[in-house]
Image (cartoon, rainbow, N blue to C red):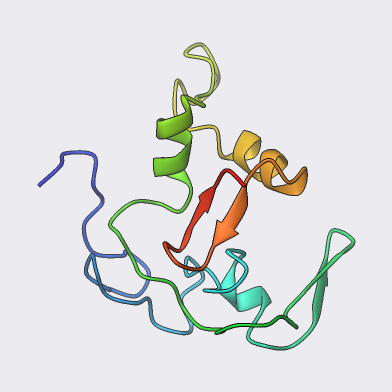
Length: 116
């Protein structure tokens, strides 16, 4: 097993390849990629954006053993500075900003952020 893999989800216990449990706050919406607990098929507003009403399945994504977004950041070489307060790690803030700008979009097919 890859030493960087987290293994089972530490919130719901899903094994890699299994879907998160519906109540898990790590789970992503299968349709939007955003946090499922903010979705659940109902309309929610967060930071001025509306989430929830969308086409496609609404439910938990598949846990792949990695914290959401870390694999994409690694593939794109997006890391924080080594001298930052936490040291060098995947830059999830840069990922979120790229998604907000439309530089990355959620793929329902692979349940991951991809370039459009």
